[in-house]
Amino acid sequence: MQQSQHHQSTHFKAYFLLIVSALIYGGNVIAGRLIAGHVPPLTLSAIRVLLALVILLPLAWPQIKNAPKPNKLELLQLIIISVLGITIPYVSLLLGLQHTTGTNASVIFATLPAVTNTLLFLFFKQKPSTYQTLGMITSFLGLLIVFTQGSLLHLLTFNLGIGESYLFLNVLSIGFFNLLGQKIMKKFSSLVTCVYALIFAAFMLIPMGAWQLRSTEWHVSTSEWLIILYMGFLAAGVAFFLNLYGINKIGSGKACVFNNMQHVFSITLSVIILKESLALYHWIGFVLVIFGVVLSLSKSAQKVNSFN
Image 1 (cartoon, one colour):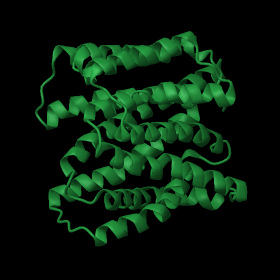
Image 2 (cartoon, helix red, strand yellow):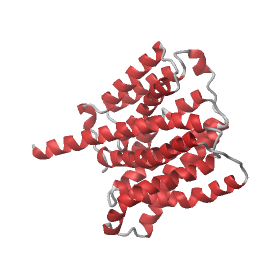
Image 3 (cartoon, one colour):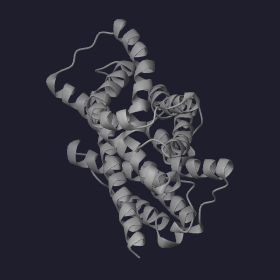
């Protein structure tokens, strides 16, 4: 009984931290809109990774010293999750958004839970429950209503071009990252895994960021530096760690469902910060997204075993 209560408490803590992570990532979308065009994108990516290390490395250092040293295979796994979870998503996002609309990008990002659970089934034979499947479909429909503004015409104008291909690569990369990140955390804590991934990403992104900085002039105001600090310390650092923690505690199949909450938070923050307005289709979509998340995490959905 006591073990069951502890297990339930751990799950609720993971749910709460994943919601916090989604809120931070939602704010990151707003920050990205505000800073767009002011800082070279690859340089911004490198700065974000460095800022994330500044806040997380001191916290992780005692664990890193006491944790077992990764062997060659584990080092390779950590490098791979760094590429899949940070480097490819950062670069493919920047490339994709240069060639497609925000609506098309949002529709593609909303497929992440379905992509992750499909990969779980293909590689680990972990089949989502009926409730998880219904929850993913419900959330996706809710986001589809929001992104297309409730208009079939918007959906019919969706086309798969090079921009959409880059963004689907982004989703596929994060899907594989969710799976491999969960596997490596059998040996290393969420925090240690997060820091290793950021260190390897820094080695990859800093040269690209420095190269772009040499060929681009940029001037950043004090308020814009505050936005960059948010995108680094909170989004690339804290939110990335909280997401890994959630994956470690409840499995990537359930954790990725919270990705849909990011879109709800980003639109809500757009209303508060950017003074945008909410229409009826927003409210309908939000209700469906939240209902879908709850459905995916219902007791019936919990019967599906994780490969933790």
